[in-house]
Length: 314
Ligand code: SER
Image: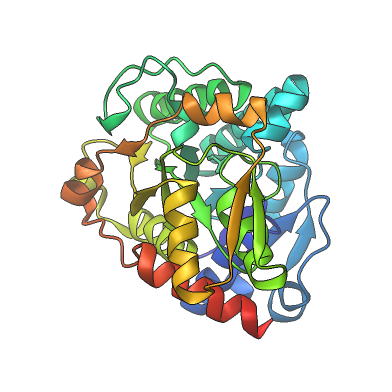
């Protein structure tokens, strides 16, 4: 990785991945590409920022050639709940965007990182210790795009030797940029409400268990996977990774340790609850641990403390 393009750079993952990559590979060597959201001030000050619509092959191709890109972190996508409101737009952005990135990479010899998700699983997937290789019959457009994306990335590697790699991320918790339109967003929102109002009304049921991870672990995982010697990888795409599995009630009781007045109530959103119910409770991430040494650093205790400290400073 010498010259890197990050699509979806202004999103929840991108806004933290770009600074981490710039720190490691040099500010000028990481091109942040956003679309609709206003870019963070430091993006514009510290390195190149461009506007890019991933549904256009030519515009991606031009950026890759102009900046001599060798690696693309392709993060631009709609999350699960907003995708369900507009499945046609989700297919266009999530699938056509990936197809364009893979085609550009095939023509220009780029490596590609593609984030898959717990959303790539469905109701017939074993929900506890979900194996790396298992049944994937998701019933959301987000999940359909993620499974198709995993397969397409595998195909581009076996058929065209494009160096594709990817991870199935769990719900991601971060304090810098809010997620926007996901099913796991409650685990971020709850912290803002706990600090500002001491109460939160949760849109998932109290006992909905999902895999979760703190953003610093997620950023490190993406970079570590892309830096791994490819000879170690038996899988390439769609590695299960997780840090913790918890429910809204578990998270609320940890927050109460730091903010004793905090209280939670529940008003279930049927669409997001049914999406959450179709996803695993806890994935088995031993393939990632064995093949490239994945190991999380944050558990529920230290991520809760860090979120509260960081958001209170804000
Ligand atoms: N966090 C995502 C969502 O809720 C899943 O990958 O949509």
